[in-house]
Image (cartoon, rainbow, N blue to C red; front, side, top):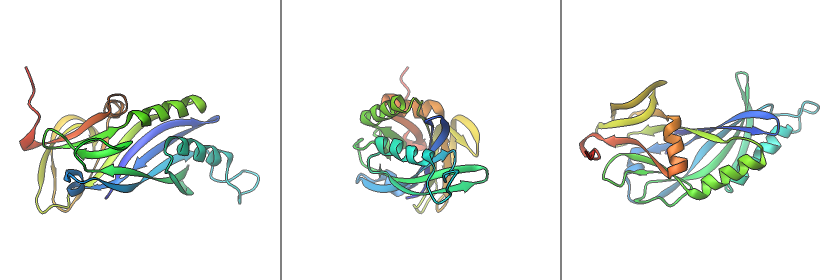
Length: 216
């Protein structure tokens, strides 16, 4: 399992923050009919890691962020708070599901049911928990997703990407090769993430040789 990345924009109290879900997936696991649970990083931007009066204590922002995240992800595990350049970030781990033939978890990365490709699915209960947390924190939690996939198979795989950023460049629909033995990172567009939350799923890519037929 390698890295995906999901980014949420939120507000804890009076502080603005970013939340980044960052799992890692293997292509073989995504294609598998058998589900597996993996731990994904969840990184939340906070105002400061330490209390301004006592550096040995956590800041109030970290404390509030812990409460907010565990209200959305009950199995979230707080790991640490650290600084990256000018930003302070609280690191969590949350379980997500990879593989399977139909959605069964709050967040799942799976093979597309029409025979090829990758989809991200999010449950209605997760959407409700995000909405509830937004209201209670007087915030607007709006996620963004970044996926890093390793092609652990022994051959290249040709795909067609949908609404992603490849090397930080926006792509609506474009061919792409998942090179064997390499890791590939792609960030979902805001529209794709909204589709996953509001509609339950979003298509990340199709296998080139199994593309979904377009009805006229």
